[in-house]
Image 1 (cartoon, rainbow, N blue to C red):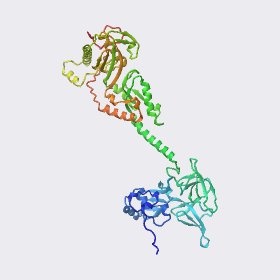
Image 2: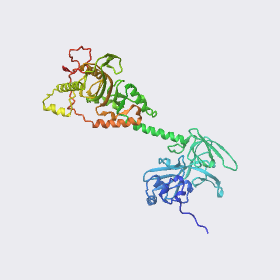
Image 3: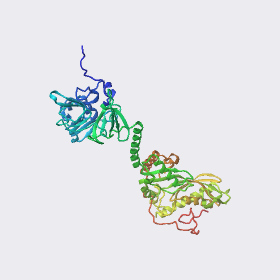
Image 4: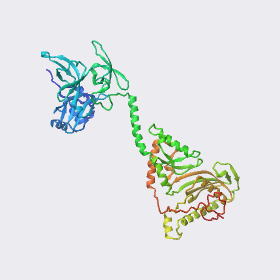
Amino acid sequence: MARGPKHHLKRLTAPHHWMLDKLGGVFAPRPTSGPHKLRESLPLILFLRNRLKYALTYTEARKICKQRLIKVDGKVRTEMRFPAGFMDVISIEKTNETFRLLYDTKGRFVCHRITAQEGNYKLCKITKVSVGPKGVPFVNTHDGRTIRYPDPHVKIDDTIVLDVNTSKITDFVKFDAGNLAMITGGRNIGRVGSIVNRERHPGAFDIVHVKDTTGHTFATRVNNVFVIGKGAKPLVSLTAQKGIKLSITEERDKRIAAKKAQMGDKIGKALNGLLCVYKPADLSLNALKKNILKRICTQGETFRTEDLRVEELHQLETASSGVCVFGVNDGVDQLEELRSQQWANQWRIECVLGRETHKHEIKGKVTRKEAFDHVNKQKVKKLLTKVIGDYRRMSFELAEVEMQSSEAFQIASRGIPRPKLPGSQMVVGLKMLLFKLPYLAVSIDSIGETDAWLRCMVNEFGLALDTTASPVRLIRRSIGPFRAEHTVLERQLSLQNIVDNISLTSRLVKEYPYDRDVVIESGKDTSEEGFGRRKEEFDAMRPAWPRDYV
């Protein structure tokens, strides 16, 4: 006894192009009998629930269909398991949306959104040409239609343009070489190309060779070829892929390129700000800037060195090392404002007593030697105390604040006043770090200093101690809020580290307190005041008032 037709479909045996997850249940909706085969169709419930997400459950999809809201090829379909197939036009009048079912290059149905005007017609492939009773000619199409009295020139494998409202043929396209076609079956399903030639094999399947727009040629059975256009122009709009199937490597390269482009947009916005880098000794600032540009542009063609701006906040000589702050792109515009904040920079100066080099350079030729045995730690501390005391007194005098007043006490509680003196330097902190003859290390907090000024200050230290001295190492340990632990090492420069550091420095600038009462405007320039020395002689330790270290 026959068991009758099957009314169920297991999810695991459902067509793969439905893209149903295994854990979503045991069964899948089984399409009803209709114009398309089970494995070549997409039920309306999957169209509404899985693709458009207009329904979340089985019941909601059924209610939408029962309200007569869904039309397939111009006819209302109330059965949610109705099988819609290739080239079918699905319209939803309530949302003013029209879709056409097409294949992508992986054999999956694509709900391609089209205009209402394009939804008035569809393409049908002729599968049979015959003559019925009383000599009436008719043709059968791939979607189960029977059309009487067709054009006599229409043959099998040709494509007709059908008006979905009247079911009348408005045009047709011959299955000829040079016409555009889409593959509807086999391993090349979804690909679009021009027909090259047709190989006839009597008693077997005819083979059709197709060439896509990228120049790749492939072959398939004639039953899998669906003509969709005259010449190279399609009669219907195609998906974003345009029927181009990429190889695994081509898809990988496309993903990488898209990711780089997306990353380039994000990084382009992130590459605006301040960059804190630790410059090693014997590396010039220009070479360091070139390394930064090289690391940014290494990732690909997204960035070019001509499109990037990198400028330093303060100069640093090649022989010196330490913290350097650079403005990147829009960060260059912030540098002038940062310079006006009169941040104190901390230096570690290491020197050798008893010798003097040419122009006080770190690696200069030794030009003079003196005895240094009489120098002790107490003399050095006394000298440093005298220097810092004189600079503090000068800062209050330039700020026009009485040393014994309450205003001076309030300012001193926040720090030493830092007047803006054009072309002058100010020492706000001085401390001895190491004393081991003939070596001496000093920590200096200063404003407006340069490497040459610091080197000359070392020489002045030696002269004040009745000997001579030359610098061995100049290390800038901090610039305002930027300390050594906030920097990126030169060998660790990479695009990701640069972006992370710019984000870090932006937070540091926002969180760093800036007391405007401490930075006092002053138009007085004391850099030219002398102490009985020659004008052409540069005295690094000479403040703008008389001094006596004896």
